[in-house]
View (cartoon, rainbow, N blue to C red):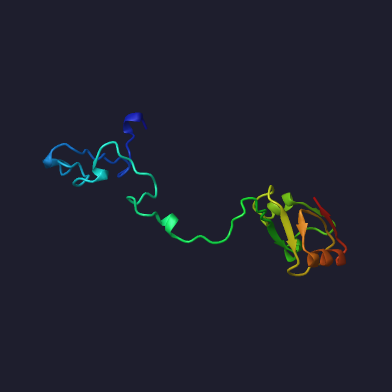
Length: 146
């Protein structure tokens, strides 16, 4: 194969619309802009969400509540998912990531008490519920908050 044998696949290259090249082109006279109005003029650009002076939708819709920009969202792991680790092992957020129980090791992890645990594990997490703590300690495990 040589460079002169190469060609683009069908539909890869599309011809640009050449406007204002006479009435025979189909894009003549008004150059696809229609008649008069703000959008037909040169040099006019409209910002996103502009509705011609009408009150924009973002301002018409009522707002309720408050969104805290500093809200700390925990990644949830239920206690029943801990049974996949070996007995006596130390479980860290990195191990949760390897097992695909969490998505990001930089975000805090919280253990919830849904299910049963049958192994004694040493767990290092940022948060844990009372019920989960009770179940892990009953199984002989330890919790370290980091």
